[in-house]
Image 1 (cartoon, helix red, strand yellow):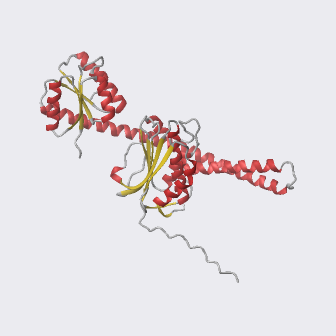
Image 2 (spheres, rainbow, N blue to C red):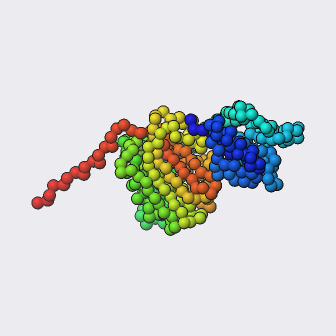
Image 3 (tube, rainbow, N blue to C red):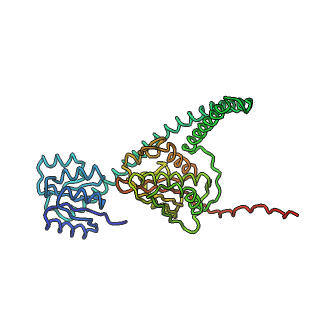
Length: 394
């Protein structure tokens, strides 16, 4: 296991260096030493330490308690306070920040070790609890949406098929010169589009039928990107990082291409707000142990194999905060001026139907990375069928 990384916030240089030596002798890593609250918040956001060793009296207008409160609320990083004082007012303020411990200076090395280990353990338990609550809330939301959408789609389809059938009969009965023929054809076209929307809802739920076969993932991604290359807006470059062949997955090629196109389109739309920019699409094999637990959908997905095929779509766009990430796969959600309705929800439905998952890594100002994980196939890719030969005419 990697050593825990600790940030030291201490305005006394001698005390700070002693703390560094103590931490390193105990086997911890030290990300940085800062002396002011504002600098502590900035360093915490940049280095993301596992814990912060925070003096309460600091340089500047912000004390350690205020800095700890902001670090914990913004980044979820636990804080262990250091202070030469232990009066009731300080202790009361420290408790209200949700701190994970309080050490009075000077302290013994064994006291620091015991308190840090408890801090890291309690922080880990709290993180797991938050993630479990988030997964449970997401699962309940998806279940409720699923029941609603499935019921609507079922009844909607029944009505649409009746309407399409009647419109077809009317169209066939009308003479080509009829003044209302054009209107009937337009009504039939609109009704069929509504039926397509109903089908997309079922795809979102993962109820769409999957005609799976062994597919070369790199080749499929290449074909999909070739199809949409011409649609990429000016000022946005598309970078491909694809192996010559493989990995092989069992998938419906048409649905898989739909996933790739939707994710790539979503990526360059995120970049369009501040061009120039770049969209990078890569294919690789990812170890199951490296698949992150946060921002993963479906929330109840669990790795059942040691490795998975991975399509990663990264952009240099504006990025997303945690609230947006939680909502980005909801039907008709968009944080853009114009949205595509069911693009990303359908992606989730297709991936779910294929036994895979999607992870999202993003933060404001840092772009986003969407990763699609699919089970690997042990079967070889079938060679393309040969076209029938035609006999030369005599």
